[in-house]
Amino acid sequence: MNFFSHSCFLAARHLRALMRQPWYIAFTLVQPVIWLLLYGQLFRRVVELPGFHGASYITFLTPGVVVMTALFSGGWNGMSIIVEIDGGVMDRFLVSPVNRGALIGGRLLWLAVVCVIQSLLLAGLGYILGARFDGGVTGILILLMSAVLLAVGVGALSNAMALAVRKQESVIGAANFILLPLTFLSPVYMAEGLMPDWIRAVTKFNPVDWSVDAAREALKSHADWRLILSRFGFLLLFALLSGWIATKSFRAYQQSA
Image (cartoon, rainbow, N blue to C red; front, side):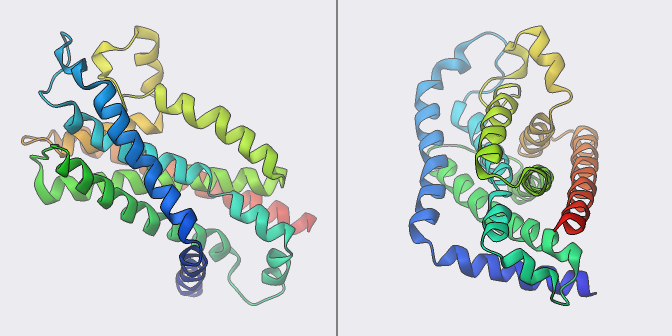
């Protein structure tokens, strides 16, 4: 019970801190909007290629950008831990009665809330630009859940890395090194059938691909629920494993603090 209540309290604390940074909120919202507008126009004739299934590239792209935004939000989540370590805030938490697991759980809960808001805004913008989601409300809910599971899993790994290296430059370098390749080794921008064979082989082990597959399939008029549930299972295992790694990293930090 303490874990859940403390996680909610810490998530609310992070959200209040975020609300005091309107420019940061603006930039984090504008960037994925630019991706949607820019790539939507740049690649809109890709649908004319043989093997590309679907009549509208913006319909294809919107869930991909939602997932990519969740990926990047999760990848940068660990930066706040380093800020709190450097500012001595983490040390004050460690001498308080707060549940230790909630120090990670609160960040991931905060990340999930932000991810849902971003995803809804992007889905709405995609609809305005012409995207049509035949899966209706159920499809949108699956899209949100897919994005959240990916963000939480990547966010937990980002927190684990931050606790291990404790340097902003190292986390920034690792994020830049990992996040973009994960994006382009997935069907965010391009239909999987048009990718080179070796990339198609790699995508099977990429959590971004699992999230995009589940979201796109759920947004179809006749969804393959076996595929959706299998991708959900992979994402859930990824999130749980990442959470375990983050917990182990936090315990190691406690012992060295």
